[in-house]
Length: 66
Image (cartoon, rainbow, N blue to C red):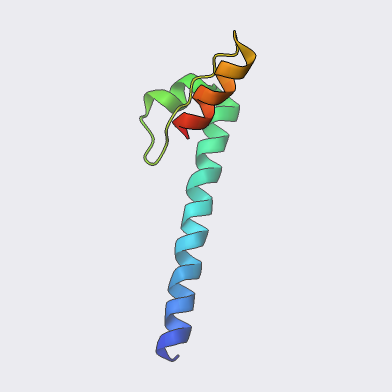
């Protein structure tokens, strides 16, 4: 295998691992609910709270939090 081929293979393995982690997180949410998932303080996850009491303001706040 040449360097480019090895790099592509490594990237492919990294993507497969990332997909597996996401799948595990989704299974946790499906089986036990959101709260246990959130209590684990997942990496690279930010919770955005939605407040749509004022339709326009809720969207602006949500968009700014992204």
